[in-house]
Image (cartoon, rainbow, N blue to C red; front, side):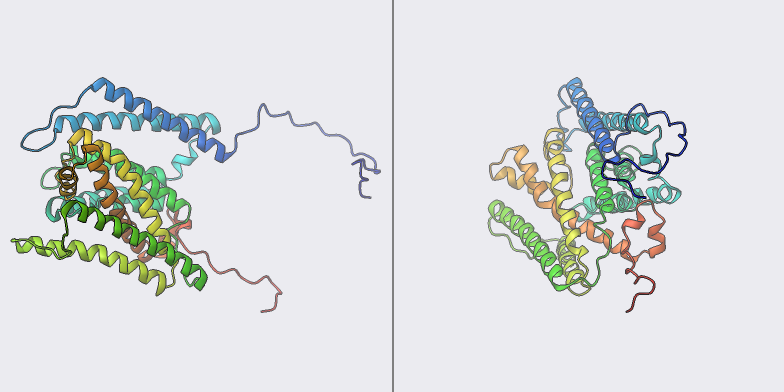
Length: 392
């Protein structure tokens, strides 16, 4: 017989069983615990970084031949490395205190991830050094491996891949692939990997094929607006600084003309490819790729600008130096010049990089992707099957 409205049953009560002892305190929610760990790690990172920079005092003056200080770059890289390690230790400590385990860390490092990370690091260094030393164009292309690992495995492997790549690039890798300045930007590479892992976890890089026209129109509007905004800001920056530059590469050296065309074709190919993915394949993920690249680029620019200005005086030997010099000639101080350079080049670079990673993910077999820690979030879910007995 059902219970009445007062909740008292008319049926005889069953023999009582011993009650389980009440728990001491309710376990924190997974989401709440995560934010506590992240806040604790961030606070420790900021404190250690500030203390380290204050302990160093002033960085070494720049070398007149190089335009920057190797000793200052090494000191700053050491401070950031210690701060990042301290933040990771606090994150792990807080998780262990909350759950008694380290699941959120260990489950991101399976065998496939551990094997992929060295390959991704080598790819970052080889391609990044080739672009920075040979092409001298205002993009980097040194984070493809970082974003790939982050998307497939998670934020922590992505951050670790970026951090290790830059540190090894400066302190282990010999010439011709050695870089004096990459180590100081290791924190930027770590943040890029962290963001890539978060975007992968949110499912932003999984295919969204054959979407309706309303969704494609909305995604296309976002993509076109962002592309045009980036193009306008870049064009405005160039024209305000350099006068009325031509988009046609010009130089007395034939090699520089060819490389100039390579840079233009690379960026143009990304724009055309993204629009083709969106409207020809009807894959809405193209819009997500653009937004992820722009957001990552803006954050990377905001973090890297103070490092470039205060540690290197805006001169890093990369293809972006001419933008910093042009901003300086236009009257901007070193902080504004490095930030302006980053806001022009970083979003374009990261949109290009995210698009290349998306092409790599699409080329991978569905089963291969699904075996990575975040692989299930990178594959398109199968179409829902009709319930048994339902008519079609």
